[in-house]
Image (cartoon, rainbow, N blue to C red):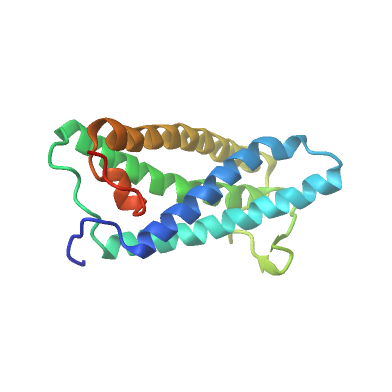
Length: 187
C-alpha cells in the first residue's frame, strides 16, 4: 500500500471517469436498445453494448487492482460515523455493480440458446463463459440479475452524485475536488 494522499491518484481519477461515462452510456443504451428498428440495426447496437460491457469489466478489474494497492484519500474528519460507513458501503457496492453488471451480461449471452458470438468492436472474438449450459431459463435468470443490478446502479449513481454535490456546495469540503482536481474547494 502506498502512503495516504489528500487526492486520488491520476490513474484512479482516470479510471473513475472512464468507467463512469461508459456505465452511464451503457445504462442509457441498455434501456433503449431493445426498441430500436430495424432489427439489423438493433443487432449492431447489442454488439456494441456487449463490446463496451467487456471494456467496463476489464477496466473495473484494473480499477479494483489499483485500489487494492493504493490507499484512497482520507474522508473528512468532520464526517459522522454513519456517513463514513455509508461512504465505504457505497464504494463497495459500486465495485460489485461495475463488475457484476457486465459479468451478468456475459453469463446471459453465454447461457443463451441463440449462441450468438460476441465480437468486440467487430474485431476481437470474445468467448462464452466456459461451463455455462445454454438454457432459456438460465439466460432469463442472468438477464434479470443484469437488469436489477442496472437499476441498482442508477439509484447508486444518483445518491453518489447527490452526496458529492452536498459535500461541495453544502459542507464545502474537498471530497469532490479530490476526484475533479480542476475544481477549487468551496469556502
